[in-house]
Length: 258
Image (cartoon, rainbow, N blue to C red; front, side, top):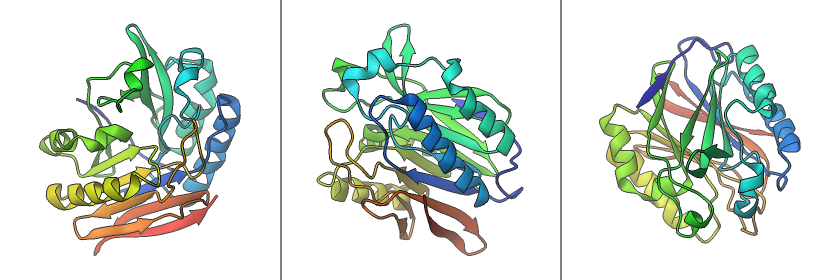
């Protein structure tokens, strides 16, 4: 497992604040989506976020049939604005994209650190049917940020109880995923996530799309759960930033319009 560390300018030193970005993606248009990501990050930085997490495949939309032509490498020049933004603002970014590997294309979360480093988490548990376009990852990735160990997941990863259990054994205190969850799937998935928070004593959070992508309706309702239940949930259709931070009494939250 890889750990990344760093001091933050975006957050208040010593105080962890997670921002979940709920927004739409323009089909296959990486340049336009980077622009919307930059706007969202600037809002999050004004709210003193330590880390901003985006939905699954947020830079392209969930478009498996376009993955081959849109796939990125972590040193792709198109990513420079996001790397620069993370470094200049002192904030961690977790951004979804198809990632080109030697053995195929993977669904990835690109991680931009305040030091200008780029790393990647690759989705381990594919949704049934995704193997037509994607290969699975195998490595877990956690980030050490302001005293919290933030474990990364992508969508169907969260449907596998062993995924979160592995992270708990490795010392995670926060489990966060970029997802695409439909209205039909949301009730069952959200209950499972709430159960994880209770069973593993974690902050569990998801960043979901709020508009259709790849032919799928999306539920919105990006949310966070603690051991005592739901902390906050966004609207089903609005573009919003969901902020969660730890205070002296536990987790508190704020929802900001984008």
